[in-house]
Image (cartoon, rainbow, N blue to C red):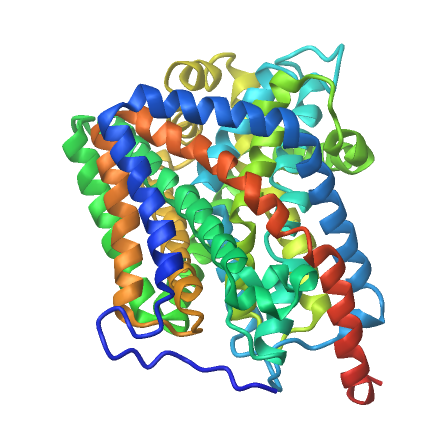
Length: 516
């Protein structure tokens, strides 16, 4: 087997930079920013037109791709191939709790807090077209509302982030000595030559741009939302300077974490994040509407499972789909290659069954329960006092919904600041992980130089700050842009559907003696 080399960078950025990928990805992000500064309306119009094209012509493909990826991974996990060990090491390099914590926090980010509060409320007050005849704002709307939120943040969303894709990347990198880059996902289609040609460079650049957009957008979004919360709670002016300070603090946190490395800052931040989440969840269940939340989760999850194919393949209202199911599927597909790179990096020594179980089953169920805790609480308070959450959501969006829910909880004086801290930490764990992963993608090294990590960490925050300077429209355009970038990425994650089983079978034959 070829030996995998790690960076020994002899400069601030390191010596193994893939300059075509670095220039293409960084250049296109810079071009987007310059365009937004010069003519935001033109950029927004272009993004919206591209967004509409993607939803209209690729929405069905993304729905099928997500389902097939999930099912193939599930089949692999529960066959003999599920016992195959990946990573070419004797045992995992980190404990299971730390491993799961990092995976959970990296994906959920700040969106997992804001959307968990707001999305169930959106569907509760305006019942999705999947459920004709259900009256909005009634107890009959609870299960439909939660089931759609579960679909968007459930099995299919998680599966595209690191099931069959992670298997292919780990096989190519740890077992065949190829660079740990998104282009390795194309090896089942093009062979190893893709690691050294322009197709591979284009795949890397597309994957980096997509995940950068998907991370920069929430950074700017966080600045807007926390600034709103600070004005609402403490009277601090909701102005650009407040937003900028919030972004600077966030960037400082995740830059330090990214520089300290996978086994120090990233692990520590993720572990603290999960512990704080569990504490807040316990407080809500014990002192808040705990029984209602459990009942809502059970009814919503049973509806989700029972109607799973119908919900996943729904094509009846394309306008609704574009802003909900297809948007979210495109968002997660855009994250797919880089998240798979990250999961491959932290999963050495794990079996295929372990990876699939955690990524495609356990993490989605935990996420769905978290949506029930926060979103279910919102529905409970809305039923008790109509408008107590929905009016805030309608008037001021996601952050207002979160605050309206948390302020009605027991011990609100403690819970509100705790949730603000949680939001910052969730997004910080995504920022540090993605800074590390982008750095791996432009170097091919598991441990890229400190300089390249710092560059991408600061660059993402700087772009968010610049876009905020031109108004919230810049951030909104960038958030929609991730769905546009999912157009090429959706084809990059296609080959692992057959590559994953193929490589799993090959490794099974190699490891058969040890597995019996």
